[in-house]
Amino acid sequence: MIVDQAVYRGGQRGECVDLGDALARLRAEGAPDNDFVWVGLKDPSAEEFAFVVSELALHPLAVEDVLAGNERAKIEVYDDTVLAVVKTLRYVESTSDIETGEIMAVIGDHVAVTLRHGDVAPLHHVRERLERHEQQLLREGPVAVLHAIVDKVVDTYQEIDEEVAQDLAEIERDVFGGGNQSHSTTIYRLKREVLEFRRAAQPLRFSMHQLVEKGGIVRSKELRLQFRDVADHLSAVLADIESYDALLSDVLATHLSQIGVQQNSDMRKISAWAAMITVPTLIAGIYGMNFDHMPELHWLLGYPLALLLMVVVVTLLHRTFKRSGWL
Image (cartoon, rainbow, N blue to C red):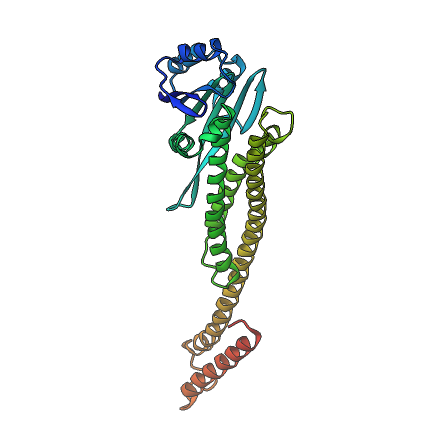
């Protein structure tokens, strides 16, 4: 569905009743390049998107990618049309999961179309922030919409980066602090979420070069500086992700090693106790056989001597196992 649509002239919002008429008017009047129509869509149906395409005359290749959906993060240029795909993320505090969504932006001559798939990272506040507090940025034209989207998404990446760092610190303290109460599933799950994080963010780093290089698709020097700042933040996040992935591999290996050591220790204890139980069982078993001609069978001190022998042997075995570290 169409969430919002408006015409922006000199950074100021204006009403847009008909998309095609508004765009045709801008082009017919020879309006400055920074005047544009911005329409926002959320999970549009094929009919709704076809209507927008017909009204705004978007590039066919860009339309094809938008209709396909579920694209990798990228920024592609088709003649005078720019297609940007960014992956949005949301951190679920209760489960420490990272949910993924998708935002697409088609930037063309006097036009900006944004499409959101899913409920992750809505764009309402992005438009509101631009209209209320960053009108100077809106005066840069439709590319400013792309900057606002990428900036918002990377800010979300930084927030998730901090959350993942806290989860990793807790697991690390537990594993290396001697508690080792974390389950292998917990560590592997966080590692999988970090992989999902990297899969969403890493492709965007290569695409950002098209936005910061001189002579690229961004003509405004100020906007290139803004994009460079976003690219720096993205690089810092990706560096953290790489370190998290490596550290989680080490934590998981250490955790499994500690489990192996603990299991070996438990087996030694079990074996030691089994050995101590075997001795009195053996003595009791021998002297419990009903034979008349057994040594000391009718001796008055035979029974106490057998008990004493059990206690002495078990005590010696216990001391031996304790000295060797088995108990």
